[in-house]
Image (spheres, rainbow, N blue to C red):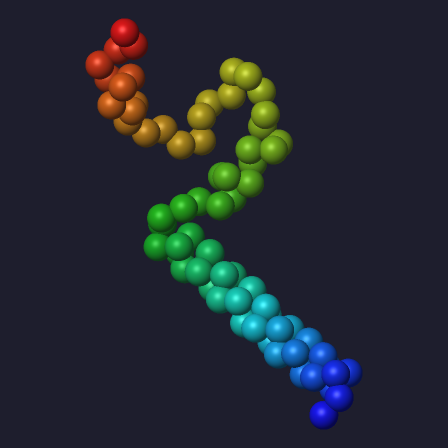
Length: 71
């Protein structure tokens, strides 16, 4: 088996691995949106609604340092 043949098999193998990983990631995104964990449509609007006075997408509790106040 020559180096060219080995490169061909390695290329085919890596293509299959990347396709499986891509489809796995797509399924992960679909399931997390279906469960309500993330709303990717809302996150996709970040680029369209990029003003300084825009309402934040995600609101969370302040960090522990912010609760105490800056010293």
